[in-house]
Image (cartoon, rainbow, N blue to C red; front, top):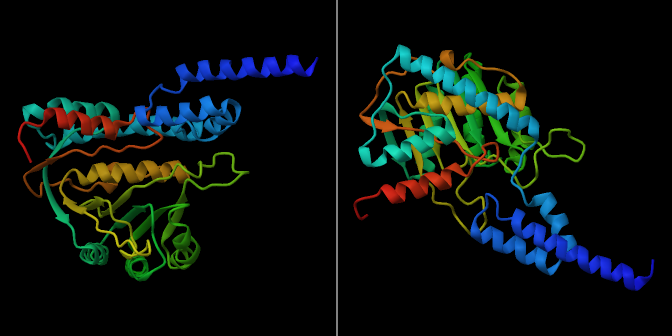
Length: 325
């Protein structure tokens, strides 16, 4: 085969790649991401396809996707049982019914009534509240965080977990393998020796059969105490200046009431994905007694779900809005 013929075949193959990817890339992808990938592929067809094959699709291992699907079925079945036993179902305003239905269909949870939601914008104050709640725990304390840093904040929360474990509280902690690498390296060994069960989420490694991709991480920030108190929001367990020169300002929600069971279910699901250990939501969720007048509904998202459900929910809420901010 002559060099000229090889060159012609390579030229044709580049256009085949461009045309095929022109159809394939836009599927279930934002317009901005589509433009970026297609620009790369049109300029460098074969190198672009190779990079796309490695990073283009937000996918986790098939084992995790199958486990997520099974967990979703368990959540819906368990939630039905909860609603049959306890009057927790809440009604959302008519304008937001379609958004609430979307959240249920893409995230498994229905709206629960009887909640109290307290917004915490004091960075150090929210850490202090979490520590106080862990110090008051009687049965269990569950923490799931992207970053659990080896700094003053991280060590103070770790100390609270150690105190809780010493008095017989079951403490389980999930930390992202990349975002929380320093905490896993420096804090986790001591915590394990003191009775706290610490696991890494989405561990990475070339030779791990079910390893997560380095760029696909678990960014959740959730804590549940005794099935009665829950925390979620944007704040990690770290000092606000963990990114040097860019002190973080975050918002956390401290929640009491039936919807804490939904946060507990998310923790249980991620715990199962990492450990294959099935925890009993009906036992851990507690009595689900009313604590306030707010209706709340949790929407978990991430690569294990088949759609970008949080984005779709925000769009639905914008369409449902009737009053100016």
